[in-house]
Length: 109
Ligand SMILES: [Zn+2]
Ligand SMILES: [Zn+2]
Image 1 (cartoon, rainbow, N blue to C red):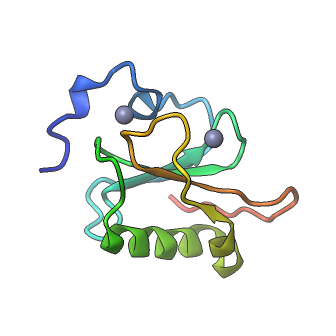
Image 2 (cartoon, rainbow, N blue to C red; image 1 turned 180 degrees about the vertical axis):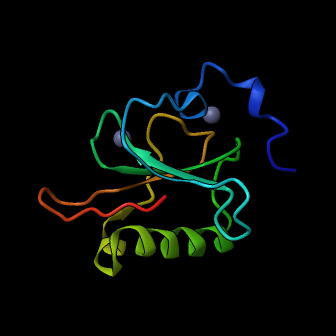
C-alpha cells in the first residue's frame, strides 16, 4: 500500500521534499513511524510532519504515532504545539509542530 502513488505527484511540494531545510526524521523501514517524514517547513520555519504518501488525513492510529514521534524528537512539551490544521496541501496529510522561538530542538537520525 505504501509508496504506490509516490511518483505521481512530482509537483507536490510535500512529495518533492527538497532537502533545503533541516530534517529530523526519515526512516522508511521503521515499523512504527515509517509512514512519516519530519523536516522544517520552508514557509513556517517549524517542524512539519508529513505522511509519506497521498492520503487526506492521518488515521487515529497514525495520529497517536505522530504524537509519540514528536515527543521522541522534540520532548514531551512539544506535543502541545502540534497543529493539525491542513495548510497548502489538503490532499496530503501533514501537521506542523509550532514550537515557539527559542524552543530547544533536538533531532535524531
Ligand atoms: Zn504530495
Ligand atoms: Zn508551514
